[in-house]
Image (cartoon, rainbow, N blue to C red; front, side, top):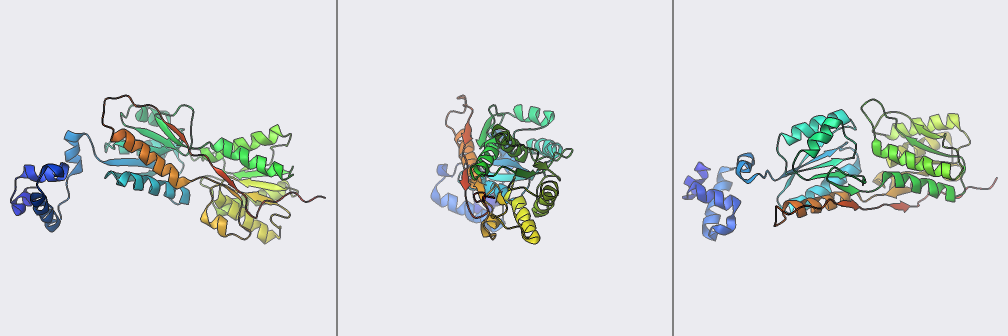
Length: 341
């Protein structure tokens, strides 16, 4: 800052004002200071500034993975919403490990973010306590628990599973299965598990056995997971009529396995996924799925955070928010009514 002030011919206080409150400085002085900043490549020390302002202007997002297009879309939507107010996004990913999530929460809080966005609603006891005591806005995303830590933006994964089951039953199928991952030590896809539980509940309500709800392999699911788990299913129940995969990624693998085995979809087997991934639309046949607007989750989360962080009366109490964005059934080419006989 001293170098900038000397080059611009102003005091360090003026440089600080240009950076913090530019409207308090004349246009000519602002132009001179900004030119010096550009010439010197000066980067303001946000951490030092935050010691007095108590703001770092970054928000932490903790996600299970960045290889999943839906989580990437959520991060992009969140970053876009925050960027309008000059907040930056710092991302950590857990690979579905609650222990890793706890370590990331601890590390991020040490860097004093202005808010934390975290995928899921189940955390270790230590992580839960750190989040409760953080003293900053916390938004749990990709679910809408009845009692979030602070705020929540998402949808009901349990109801996603129920919708998938109702759709397959409405087509006349009775031998119905589902494919998901198992809870393997610390690695768990709790949102996928909630979909399986909702799916199985509807089967039982309809008088259909839920013994073909298969949990195999570790999270995250993959194309290989879908192929392997469908193979396990066919070995157990070669007469299966319909399948729900907890992710389109797994559904694509299952569809490819059907092609390899000469099983016609949807004539011999109906298949539905979740997520509305690009690849599901491009498959032949195109995969029926349940769509969630992942980018909207990010945008709504960002808008919620800005309404909290940028509010005029900082001492006013904040009402807990639960924003349910819902989901849609997209019927494409892999589900069809059961053929008689």
